[in-house]
Image (cartoon, rainbow, N blue to C red; front, side, top):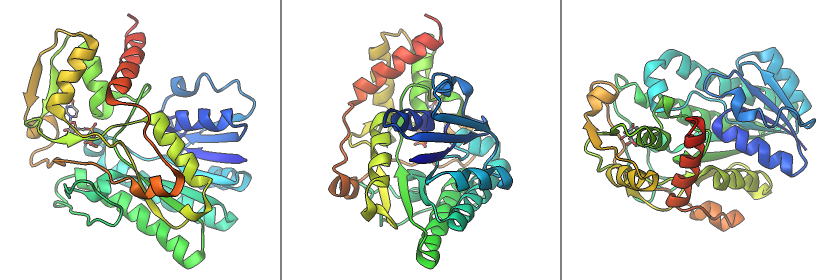
Length: 323
Ligand code: UDP
């Protein structure tokens, strides 16, 4: 099959490309290298089944050609990372809304299936544990920029479901919870690459707020198996799925684990949210997915523990730092 991966030079997209290539599929990646990078896909470029187009999903002409060629679109391209959303709100909102609209409109024109990557951010500050796909979304005021990401992803979901209902376009929505692994950059705020980078340099680990907030982390290869499994399952069409890890850990405990795994002499430094992000910033206190829906449908399982993940990211970051 020919698969178009928007944002395929990003951290998740590069692993998804690899997995599909291993299966013998042909991959077309469109990526503007805004948060993705050529180094993520440099090992794939020489593969004759891998095609890379350096452009934005907002370029309708380019997208028309690519969607026309491919059988399936996996739409990963988006402005991601809390820090990026806050630093560049206009560009982020435009990419996430107009970009997805272009992808869906063209997929409908050529009648191609779309898997839309959504996010656990859509649940907002609902800290129910675990969060299931039909749970309520709770958002703060529009003056707090972080909510624009949740709102834009929710609008993408509405749009995709509207295409499914009104045009019978085959769409699948996957809500990714905190996904981690090698190649993820800490530049846009993601906590694990940041902590590991800090620990390897023996710098203080920057815990935002009081560190009592929790997250569940998934390894990127598990997530990728989930994505491919959903696309291969016809009963997934028209549905929304959580994909994420099952363990829950506080950010304070995560910092301690990182220090121990990396054998670092770093200290932990707490930084108020106002300083870390924006005045009035609101964080999610807990975010744990209910993954029974994807488990029941495709037998999804997480196979990597948090320590496995931390070791893999540590190895990668050590190489990157040239140790
Ligand atoms: N965080 C932190 N220090 C950092 C980066 C992030 O304490 O240097 C916290 C952040 O405030 C959040 C959690 O770690 O509570 C996860 O942040 P991330 O940006 O990785 O993902 P989010 O779940 O916020 O989308």
